[in-house]
Length: 394
Image (cartoon, rainbow, N blue to C red; front, side, top):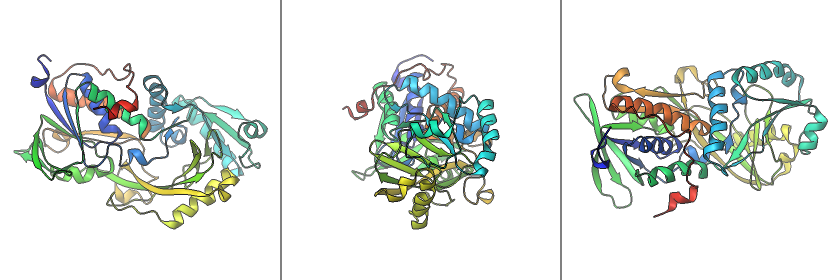
């Protein structure tokens, strides 16, 4: 590709969560002109509401190997390109019951297959590291989990994208996509501060709205197989552990405790909804976080509650096949709607996790650049990100 910024192909990204920010960063490094619009504050959707875990992938090693591999690869890469954003405290998968112990062999085998390092600890060693663990534990397995700030780490992608020329606009709502002759050529938007409506033209529009992907896709007359799956999280006062604590069993409710500064975040439940703007925080789900979390760390039972909230995961799959959302993979997918739906100029990136946002963006940017005839390779694996504070610079 040659020419200056004004002659560069223009990509409009809809969605200002972590994936949208990472995609803006990736594309600007390849010389693409980028505009990103977000209807609220950046990272104010699902990105800013998760519990702040940098996944090792161990949670998925048994039943979702693709997601496990994605997580461990991005875990190690993000530590290099976003230094200082993580508390590299590791995690423990704790076995308490005979049923947990029966899960141990398949867990260790899954971690080995997917390249996740493990260290099996005797109960005494685990209790030395984390005295507040349930004293009845039978085993613990150490893995390279870490803690991150759910908003600050993604903001580093926004900061770097903006420094490289991306136009990042929040409080801008997409009213409709500009669709004609089977081609999406931009979007009609409204500035929610001024009320002004305008059109943003683009060579390609990318739908990076997470659990809202299905709603945006309908504006182009296409379907995206996304199932918004909310989960409740509970923050209690007190740093009850220094490591991330997981239950050694198949994924379930309240089976993880993530230390966040002076709080402990317990998560999460799971169900399926149609509208990601209508989630709620069911009281029985909050109580379940207390009940299940206290099995791992008994002090959870008496810890004062700080807050409870819910966030919708953007899971890929059929609603008919998902009673709770746990049945669906945590992997991600880029959809070129010219191939899938004969609608040109429109691409969707959805699924995944906060840990895999950079990898998601790379795959999507590769697809976008192929469509634009750009052969510049991805540079985000080597580019160290600006600090999150640069996201607020004028």
